[in-house]
Length: 191
Image (cartoon, rainbow, N blue to C red):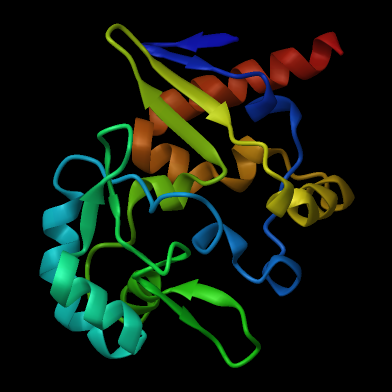
C-alpha cells in the first residue's frame, strides 16, 4: 500500500498494465455485476437534471424503469447506485451499431448536450474508491471481464494509473496525481 494524503493506494494501481479494449469486451462493465454504478454526492441530482438530454438514447426498457423506479436506488450495502435494467444494463447505456455497450451520458457530453461527463465511479473504473472513517482505499477491481484490457495494457505498456489519469485527477486533483506519478517512478526503480 501507498499513502497519499488521506488515501491508501493499492500497489496494483502502479504495477498493473491496462487499456480498455471495447471491441473485445463490448462494454461489459456497464452490463455485468449485481448492482448499478455507485453515485457520489450530488451525482443523483446531476443525472436527474441531464435526463432530458439522454432520454432518446435510452432503451424503452430503461425509460420504463426510470419512470417506475427513478434513476437510482439503494443497493444491499446502502449505497446509492444507478438503476439497472433486468438485473444487467445500467439505465444510462445504449448500444452502438457494432454491439458495444456505451454510456449515453458520455455521448451527450461529447456532443455538447450536457456539462456532466459521467459518474466518477464509471470514469475511474476499474479503480474503485471506498471511503472509511479516516481514509479512502483506492483499489484495482480485478475482474475477468477486463482480461482483454490487461492484455492490451501489457502489449502497449500502459500502467493503470496512466490509463486513468484524467479520472484520477478529476477525483483527487492534480497534486495528488503528481505525487502518485512520482511514487510510481520511484517504485519502478526498485523493481
